[in-house]
Image: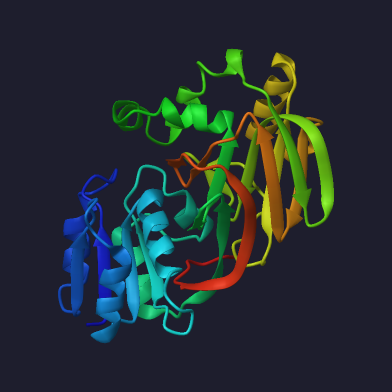
Length: 297
């Protein structure tokens, strides 16, 4: 078996599965439909004994997140390559990696090219450890994610995050944080949100870390300070203009590690998945994954 393919029937473009089956019909591939009972790590370990070389994540950012967590539990010397077929609503991480939205073109990447080293991010808290590939968004970002029903996603597509934020803007919660960014301390800082990025976009191709590269061995950390309504207007306008990192309300750093404490506790979404645990440490794992990329030029 050359490929192990995890696919998500609930992804935004699940109809692309038939096209993918056609593209891989002549190649030994095991297909596994994702559900709550699937043990992804066990599936990968079993596939490795059968000669699997590449794991394919066919779905959106949530599917990629689940597969990345399973891959990171495999010893690095045995860890198979990762290919992504973007079948979600937004496909933020695949966009950063320049993977085509076309199923056929995305498949051609792992059929005809060689993988490249890509970073992952490890997060730790009280009694838990997880990984992600794209963006962790904390604070009021989580409240926006809670507004994103399947109906809203279907109707608004990549614009659903902006639509979901409308009811939050007038009632932003303040978090008092203490942060250590590679030894630089911020104590008692009032903030609206913290983003820890490996990829450039989040929640529908919204550019939250325009300088991020998942191949540079660094985290892009964005802290949005507390402010007033006009400050939020400036941030939104700066985001649309591609210059929001220059706003006075933004603290931006590139670093290898972030230690964070917040009052009240700050919840995060990891590539769209809300986690209940409070992360206290983010650390880049440089070159952890071998991934098939699109043309980066």
